[in-house]
Image 1 (cartoon, rainbow, N blue to C red):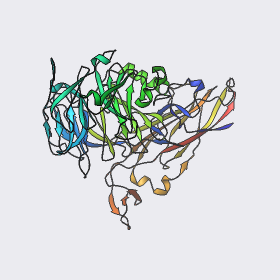
Image 2 (cartoon, one colour):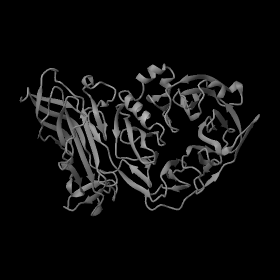
Image 3 (cartoon, rainbow, N blue to C red):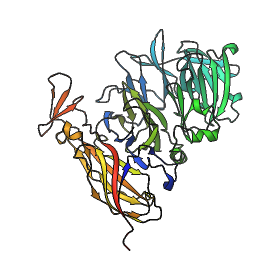
Image 4 (cartoon, one colour):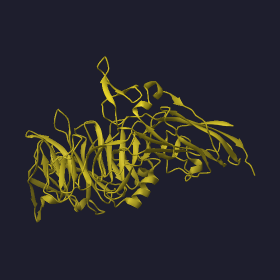
Amino acid sequence: MAVSIPAPIGGWDTDSSLPTMPKANAVILDNWIPRGGYLQLRRGFVEQVSGTADPVETLVAWRGAASGDKLFACAGANIYDVTTSGALPAASYASAASAKWNYTNFANDAGRFAILVNGSNTPLKYDGSSFATTAITGTSGAITLTPSNLKYVMAHKARLHFAEKDTLRVWYLAVNAIAGSSGLLDLGPIFTKGGVLVGLARLTLDGGIGPDDYAAYLTSEGQVALYQGTDPSDANNWSLVGVYSLPKPIGDRCLLEHGTDALVLTEAGLLSLTQALRLSEDEQRTNSYSRYVTNAFAAAAASYGSNFGWSVTSYSGRGGLIVVNVPTAELSTSQQFVRCTETGRWCRFTGIDAFCWATANGAIYFGSTLGVYEWDQGASDNSVTIVGDILPAFQDFGNRTMLKSAKLVRAQLYAPSIVRPALDVVTDYDKNTIPTDIQTTVTPGDISPDDANVVRQDWTGASGIGYALSPRMRVSLTGANDVDRVSVTEDLTSLLLVGPGGTDHILTRPNLPLDVEVQCVGFDLTYEAGALI
């Protein structure tokens, strides 16, 4: 018998039981992005700047110039300008007590600034040319602010709001100010579960900055206070909308302003704040952004929740992705839970040991052990192999009690002919049997434009025997970095890379790793009823 199995574009599923998992979902989906109608092997990463003596724990994107963003890496006591790839420059700032900064961009009549706080240093400002401290004071009754204790910051209604570390206190500046005397908003009396503040965000319900633009304050116990108004010092222009309960957040970079919404990273998964505020805690878990992978979030939170490095980042490239960084060993190894914005489905990235992420000038970067890397470039992870692993939902093909013997299997791959997958059929919910990898190293001379635009359908033998079957496929890909020479097309619109074999290959920029598009659109397999005794 022959059966066809579509690509599991329903995404990674850790919540369904294996026998009842929807057919469109996947038991394993590593380094494959679930697009509309196909799976896409993720791109790799390239070195931006290396040589920092300490791990890069924060990336800061200053967005203040018509010429583009500036990107800074915070490592140890130093902050480096890493906007341009190449050698590590001299530090732009060299007196940090902690590299775990939080920041926001803010503009006023004096210019455009990045405002940075870390709970250890006097707050910093970057004005497009240099870093300097910004003097913030505050006194309310017996409480006096220590500026170096400010740990979180947001811009709301033309004011900067700061959260004081290990407290439930918020300090706010005058309209348009980046320094000066601050007022106190003490949230201790309204948070009945205690805890400390771990994030601030704007929450917009009308799609813009207007009367429905709220300030949200999140605690370590999962309580959120929502305020409306513009001036916390004026009772007629500042009011508490409500206090709401969420599952406990993970890490201290657990809030992301995302369009008109705010996303919250919690032990129960990734929640939309606008949606969660209307639901009970039980309903929040079943209606979260992370539907089908809530068990993965819960398991990761239980194992790694205390590690530094949890974060959530939005990337507009490749149709849009939300990247949740999961630090499996603090400042050592990581994986990512990734949501495709286009489909709302999830996958997992492996092989990217990131500690922090940021976007700048339309690209996405991460900080790691000794430097900064640009992701979404090329067909290898800085010359290390990318391994894509797929295990679709198991199927019994309408007969749960009949033993089946797999004979042949093939993947339908949209990929250059040099790309050879490792394939087999696994049975009865076995997640541990892995096909032997077939390493593919691609050089510029291996691919022509015509060769890349073909669906590969090559049969291979299969040996699985069981009641429920599923194809298991791994693609191991390494793309070369070198080029022989670069020329310009006659219409001056593209660059041509001429490989060792003399074949022309279109590139957008010279000296970048070779991009290799690999898509999976489905599988076919054949089996016989029964098996040898």
